Image 1: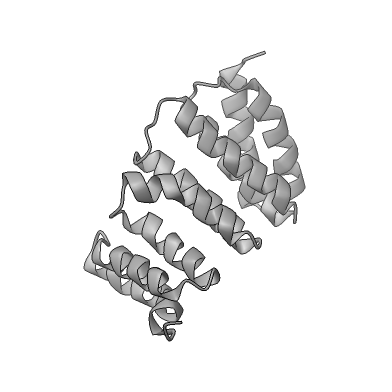
Image 2 (image 1 turned 135 degrees about the vertical axis):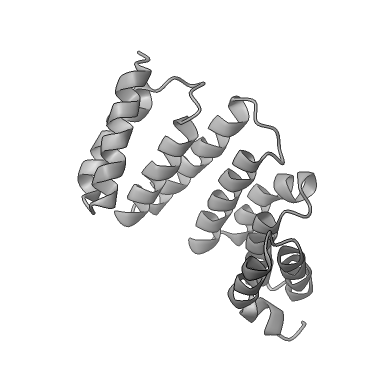
Length: 174
């Protein structure tokens, strides 16, 4: 049964509990909130993404990955097109999760629609560089890193990305 006001209230409480470090309480609140949410509500993707963070804190990485996939699905179901900022961000977090937990091939697969639809978006390219590096595709990783840096929204962000991508940029080509 949809009860969006109650879902929003529970999600706010869950977020507050997460920020306070009460991860188990936060988990329970998200588990109560999400089934009540309207599938078309703009906040549903965020609920899934926040819940994924809580699950990661609890060491439930596979469950967190499922929630990040649901976050992406919510963005797409609600009509956001590939290349839209919300979809790029959802794909970024999913790819990061997959990479962090030993599935770089799946991470690259998750990113491909974003790199095709928004080839110059810095956020997509930074995670792509790390994924390609993990796959030992160093030349491609360097190209992605260079695209991330050259498309950074500010010079300061470009400098930050150079530091973030330092290992990729300094690695010998294979």
